[in-house]
Amino acid sequence: MRYTDDHKQATRQRIIEAAGRRFKQDGIDGSGIAAVMKEAGLTNGAFYAHFASKDDLVANVIADQLRTQIADLDAVPPGRAGIEAYVRAYLSPEHRDRPEVGCPSAALLDEIGRCGANAKAAYSDGTLAFVGEVAARLAPEDPQSILEQVTSAFALMIGTLQLSRAVTDPALSNQILERGARNALDLMLPES
Amino acid sequence: MRYTDDHKQATRQRIIEAAGRRFKQDGIDGSGIAAVMKEAGLTNGAFYAHFASKDDLVANVIADQLRTQIADLDAVPPGRAGIEAYVRAYLSPEHRDRPEVGCPSAALLDEIGRCGANAKAAYSDGTLAFVGEVAARLAPEDPQSILEQVTSAFALMIGTLQLSRAVTDPALSNQILERGARNALDLMLPES
DNA sequence: TGTACATCAGTGAACGCGCGTTCACTGATGTAC
DNA sequence: TGTACATCAGTGAACGCGCGTTCACTGATGTAC
Image (tube, rainbow over all chains, first blue to last red):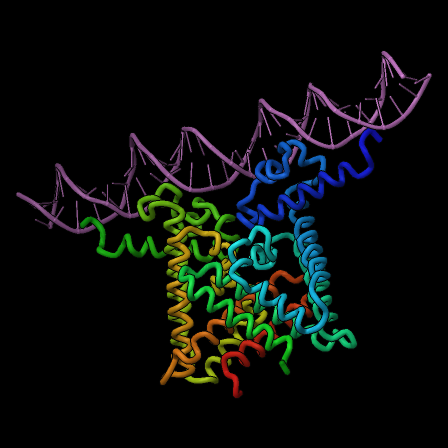
């Protein structure tokens, strides 16, 4: 082996993360291979040493994005208070204004719906794991009982963030976020 | 005038509607001018006699899509029963499986968030008018009182439909739709 | 320890193609006489 | 009523450009002796 064992893996991961940022900022269709590679500090030719095609990259980026989103839950304090803070941060003006470092679902969900089978499978698996993890934090003894409601609340959060990004009146945008947070929490934590 | 007064207007409208279908099916970035014009039964050269640019078309398509969505409310019976049927039709497998003739928000909202000011303004105005009309049907005496909640329920409906389109397991997809419909109705019609 | 070598991650130019846009032209139309 | 004409919606080829992808090459690396 000419290079250290994980040198190539590290480069690959760097490309995946750069692509994640670009995709979330400009859309999947709106981001070219050359731009992604430049953001990763490489030239376009190196791309095909790491991925079979752009579709292959897309599926890997989606899987990685959801893995990160799940890993970020580790920083959330256990119980309801933690989830409440998480929802408020998700539906905050800061998250709205920085899609490139935000939730992949809010930035890309309709485009993912038009992607190929691999990308959709990666999204499906990742999202199921994510809502499962949230449910486990809210009801450790029986996560299954609230899984559907957590999933539905997540759909509300995604739609709310997208709507807040598309609307031109800043006051209305903030109001949409606030109402969305209240409703998402009501769906997930009914007796609160 | 060589042609009838509204001949050119009719062609323009045909292009806008063809573009609406294509955009919702393949995305805005994923739909070329040539493909749109072909769907309208024309050749690409005629495009610039009707629109200044693709951006100009996009803004007009978004405005037209929301106008249609509002006009479609006329077919909805007044009162809660009508809205209930509307929500169930919106979150139905039929709507999920035919994005090209469905809701523009569900098909395109994250892409609209990345569009220019004109497109976002068209979306913003149209959506405000749409939720206003829904609120007027639910609370004719005081639509303002439920406007925020109707908007939030619409966000839930959009996110739910997008999620149902991205998920690969059909049973899960249907379950997401059903739960989303129940929750959307709970948000809009609290005492039902 | 020092040198020649094999490896292979990354370079950068090139491929055909479809994009958004432009433009010289066509030919069906309603009007003028 | 019939013919010549001006209008202009629509045609289709072409523009430069960036796309996804390919490939001959480079040069830094760890290994062998």
